[in-house]
Amino acid sequence: LSFFIRSISFTIMLLSFLAIQLNLCFSNTQFSLPDLRIDGHFTFTNNEFAAKDYGNQFQFLPFAVLHPESVSDISATVSHVWDLGVGSGLTVAARGHGHSIQGQAQAHRGIVVNMESLKKPKMEFEFGFDFGYVDVSGGELWINILKESLKFGFAPKSWTDYLHLTVGGTLSNAGISGQAFRHGPQISNVQQLEVVTGKGEVVTCSEEKNADLFNGVLGGLGQFGIITRARILLEPAAEMVKWIRVLYSDFSTFTRDQERLISAKKSFDYIEGLVIINRTGLLNNWRSSFNPKDDDEASQFKSEGKTLFCLELAKYFNPSDNAGEIYEEIESMLSELRYIPSTVFMTEVTYIEFLDRVHTAEIKLQAKGLWDVPHPWLNLLVPSSKIQRFGDEVFGKILADTSNGPVLVYPVNKSKWSNRSSAVIPDEDIFYLVAFLSQANPLSTKGKDSLQHLLSQNKKILDFCKEAHLGVKQYLPHFHTQDEWRAHFGQTWETFQRRKMAYDPLAILAPGHRIFQKGI
Ligand code: FAD
Figure (tube, rainbow, N blue to C red):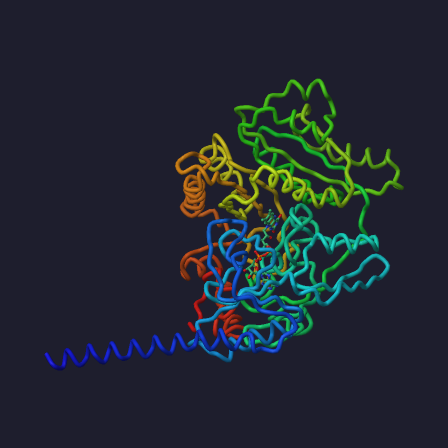
């Protein structure tokens, strides 16, 4: 009995000692962080913004937020956490514009780096005859890069649909939009990076120099370093855009036409697609911003009760171009397609209006209080050979009545993706981005618009993909266990793990993905 009592007392003593050490560690950190010599500053209160994201489902409050003014601020902070070692339990998450869905840019009781305060370097442009590049801060918003580069008549080649996202945020994933079939994702259009690794080192990297880190960081979910500067490739920009929409009722005709367009030598500059389920007065709504080619026929078209597939296309042009020639070119490309003839709609907008189109929608949703609701988004990359099977089940059965938000479907060419980057993609020459961009009604608990219902719908889709062995990969991935992460990476898991050991061995960075735990 006395041995038992002594063991218990010893255990209690040990636990108290550990608790005191842990406490000391936290308070040491708390007091030593403000002592770090930095150009920017830390905040320890009013940091609720750093515990939120666009998904509106996960809220983890950080212990501190760094508002850096220089790369050395970030390096000093990460070095400090590195020096504290495993025991501090502190992690560091770079936060871009906080438009993640599942808390990926959050750090529970850790340090969040508010990348948007990093304004250095100022954008620096370099141009040749028909090419250029710009050096930007990792915390820069793409919309600002567009506005600045247009002053020189240039623009980045590859985009996301929404431009109020940071360079570091999209390069940590891939950055995909309707230009990706031709130029590849944004990670294929970066020449050089400056990165702060998990040891606090500042490293410049490219395909020629420190290539392993460069490739690791691109699509690397923030696991190997914080991107503080990026060199983005530019091309001469057009001034205007012809923006076209046509409808299909048959999924296989729709995807065949999409694939034909992304494989053609001469094609549109932007190719995307949408699934539209049981929408009343669809074409009538389009009229507020698009013109029907045939007004009478379009007004007789009924969309309610149907699942339709909208092909969305854009052709860039300049006002000085021959209008007749542009029209002929578009007509000739459209004549190859097999959409429903009465559903051709077209409009003409400036290049910047076209690229910033989702922001226009955002302003309307903000006004109605519908922007800051939960967004249980699911993004999948589906191999072309399986897209029909996927469509039959998902659009034919799982989402037969409604979608609760846009559903995007469009193909891209694998040849435009580097196989050295960390991005995980299906093993097929053509694969589709299928994005379920749902929004939940925060007041609904059981309805079809409730968060619960939408999450269970996502699960049904994921379960089907797994059971049917479709070879689908998640884009903007989210998993609960390391085994699931391992399965997601497949053959590239070893490389991913090796890079983690090389550049962030204490697992300090980007804890919100829950891939690695600090110290393991
Ligand atoms: P955050 O959410 O702040 O961060 C995302 C991840 O990147 C986190 O893990 C974070 O730690 C890490 N990170 C952030 N900055 C850095 C950095 N400097 N260095 C290293 N890691 C960093 N994606 C597409 O590909 N195509 C689209 O068309 C598209 N449209 C979207 C539209 C909307 C309305 C929204 C909300 C998202 C969209 N996305 C799209 C997804 C978007 O690209 C990602 O969610 C992206 O990560 C968001 O960028 P952010 O700046 O908000 O990053």
